[in-house]
Each structure stands twice: as C-alpha cells, then as structure tokens.
Length: 344
Image (cartoon, rainbow, N blue to C red):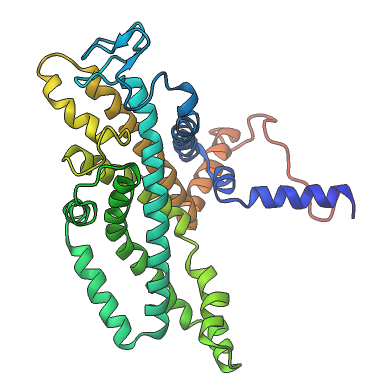
C-alpha cells in the first residue's frame, strides 16, 4: 500500500471528526462563532487539566508558611485575584472550580445519555404499554422546573453529605434526572422514524432478532445528534450546578471548589465595594457557558443543510458580484476560469 493512500486515509479520518469537519464546513460569521466557542472551551478544559500545577494554593487552603491568609484582601501581591470573606484565594478557587464542573458534567451527562438512549430505543421500538408508561413519566418529569427538580433530588440524595464524591454524585444525579427526558424524547422519535425505514423492515423480514436490529441498524442512526446535545447540555449542567451551589444545595467549600457557592458568599461583599469575590467566579461561569453554547449552536446550524447551503450560496453570490462590473463585464482577472471536465 502506498504512502499516498495511507496519508489520504488519515486525512479523511481526521476531516471526518465532528469538530474538525464542522470547522471546514463553516464560513464567515459562523466560522468565527465556532472558533470562538472552541477557544473558550479549550481554555476551560486546559485550566481543568493544569489546575494542580498553576493554582497557587489548594481550594480549601487558608494559610501558608507566612501565616493565615487575610480575608477580603484586594487583588495583588501573593493573591492575584484577592481573597474571599472566608480567607480563600480567589484565583485558586476559580481554577479548582473548573475541575468540579468538568467532573459533574461528565458524570451527569454520561448517565443521562446511557439511561435516555436505552429507554428511548426500547420505547420507540417496542411501543405498546411500555411506550405509553415511559412517555407519561418523561412528560411528568419534563413539566417540572429543572432547577426546582434538581434541588429536590439533591436534598433527597445528599442528605447532608459534604464529601467530595458525595457532593459530586448528589449534583450529578440531580442533573441526570433533569436531562434523561430530553435524550429519551429525541431517541424515541428517531427510533420510531427509523423503524419504518425499508432497511429495518427488510431485517425484520429476514428474521433478525430485536436486539440485533436495535444495536446494528437503529442505534447508530438514532444517536447522530448526541454530540450536539452533549455540548448544549454541558452548558446547562454548569448553570444547574452553579444554581444549586448558589442556593446552598451544592458542594461544601471544604470538599471542593464550586463557582456557585463562591457567588453566594460574595453577595454580602457587593454592597461593601468588594467586587473581586463575585466577579471572577461569575466571569468563569459566563465564559464557560458561552463557549459551550457557541460550539453547540454552531454545530446545530452546520448540521442543517439548508442553513449551510444558504450561507455558501450567499458567499458565492457576493464573490460573483465583486468580479462583475456594473455594466455586466468582468472587471479584472481576480478569478481564474474553472477547468473543463475531463482535462487534467
């Protein structure tokens, strides 16, 4: 096998990856939005990985070799972003908080995908009483306000636990309950549509088992929108986690750093002119959610061929107008004629 064939296959594989393929398909403002979202999301993930190395102190550290940290100290000196009312370093809390957010996102969204996809496939394929029962339960859960439902589930699950994994699992389970109906409804609708397709009906006629049809024919086609839903639900998970922490149902500061909890403790500082305890955790939440939302919305637009085709058609029309003068003649040699078919 030649080197050109191998490099061609590697190139096609890389160009087929979700993010890379969407960047190549994007044009104009859409590409700018996607790249901006990827940069913000990359910074968020980078701070998560490098938090143990770049954070000057631990998330619950209150002193060092020189003594205890001052409370509500302005940014500067040893504490670049200042300290909180409890004496925590703001920069360290912001960096360590990204790790907490990523952990909750991964645990919550993975559990939501697993349960939502499994229930959606079973409900859409078999139908009957199972479908009716699952649809009623999903609609009942979906009708509740998401944050209120997360608060109730957090109270039921945590029961006053303040350990790291206890708080992480409590927040993750509460967010999972909110997200499962979303995945269930999308996968169920796709399964019902695919069940009527000729290739699925042919597999049924040939005597394929239900398990084989679901896993080999329906699953791959019904889960194409999961990367998009993951990015959108990741930003929603951060907001839900911050809401739980802000209302006092999140993770204790001695167990992990959490942006919503820090915002709650910074409320009293705002009226005293102490702005740094609330501004920097708030900026972290806004930029992270903005980055994930831009990526998700850009992928959603690029997956729609109507929007993508309209933007490309608009770009070609503008280039054609620039190359043709007002009298209908070509104004310059800015565009080379396309080669005829069949010529090298």
